[in-house]
Amino acid sequence: MRKRYLIEVAQNDQLIVFCPKSIIKGKKIKRISFGSKSLAVDFYPHPDRNDRIVISREIQKALQYPNLHIPLHIFLENEILTIGPLVGIFTSGFTQSGEQPIGERTPFFSKLLSVNKPVGAHIFVFGEQHIDWDQGSINGYFYHQNKWQLFEVPFPHVIYDRLPNRRSESSPKLRKVKERLQKDYLIPWYNPGFFNKLDVFERLKQDPSVERYLPKTLPFTSVSLIETMLAKFGHVYIKPKNGSLGLGIHQIIVDKQTNEYYCRYQEIGDVNRLRKFHSLKRLFEFVFAERSLDHMIVQQGIHLLRVDQRVVDFRVHTNKDEAGNWQVSAIAAKIAGLGSVTTHKRLGGDIKTMEEIFPQEKCAEYKDKLAAAALLLSKALDRNMEGIIGEIGFDLGIDKTGHVWLFEANSKPGRSIFSHPELQSFDLLTRKLSMAFAVFLTEKSLLHPEELYK
Image 1 (cartoon, rainbow, N blue to C red):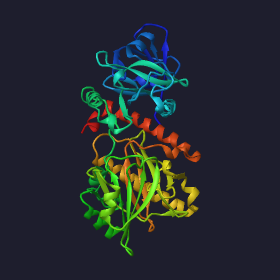
Image 2: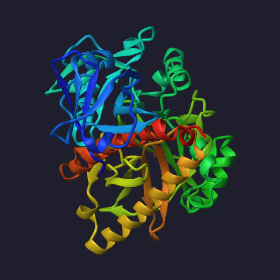
Image 3: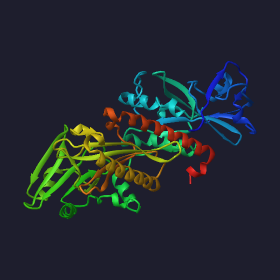
Image 4: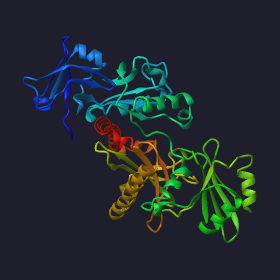
């Protein structure tokens, strides 16, 4: 882990910075910077401390540096000493409440920002309304000393995209903000955009390293396509291309002995339904009446592992770390509720640790298989999708032969698995890693920008 330095503010107005001798020895440094602000100053060795950098009130004011007493990283390039990183988290849905500034999502953001000290970063949350384009500054929400505080800070080194849904993501106003900060200010923007399910599969199909994990997945074109896939696989899933939370998923099963069709799905009010039909045509007339299927995909059904006669699949989180490398940060099992088409918790699903449901040897085997698949899939998505990806939540299955399958990849994974008491340490790990990756991106943007924009 790189060394961090406490930034101390001295009560004087001189444009002088005192640094540990190890930083300035043999180097020519002319400026200090924080975020998008920089200032010409004189550098002197600190007489007796090697763990801190001392700036004056005047420098603090010019750099718009909030003094939160957090040891930060330093980056040296082109005779500039940069302190940071300053990480902006971009979102929407702000309220007028001082205690709940981001509405019901405020607790999530307070937990995310609380990793600032272990990561060594100044982290704030902002929306498009908080940007002062003329001054090149942002009125950002910091979570400090267990309360929300507003500080005016420069434009950040990097931006972490936490827009809450596809609607906000497609807003012309918000897209313009993102484009301007990326193109005019060259600020790296990571985890941009929700994945489109079909797009993910189409791109991954071209990558031989992960082809074996992909169930057959096609855009819905006709009832005859369903008939063909049912003949081959016995059951299929129909899903929205841009769905989330298990909404809109239908499972269709054929009984080849009786030639009857079953459809399992969820009705309004989170009620699970299983209905029987004498023909596929009748099933579609009843279940999908007056509903366009242009936005749906059809996916091969898999005969998955079961626990107590209930289907089980797995959520695997991966994150890039401070060195820019992928690592598996959490694995949890999700057991389907009775009669449910998915394993989602709101439909009666249960979250379990792997150790709770598998004997020790099987647990180790399945964990290894899931981790290996998730890392290969993460690298493949990194190669084949646009933008800078820093975290992914995978929904994976293991069939009765032990083969791993990819069902979905989520660029902004939900965090329901971390409600399990034994998974809360992994909640902290995923938050730390999502912010630690900002340190890596900051270093790249300052020292090797060509590697980010190639």
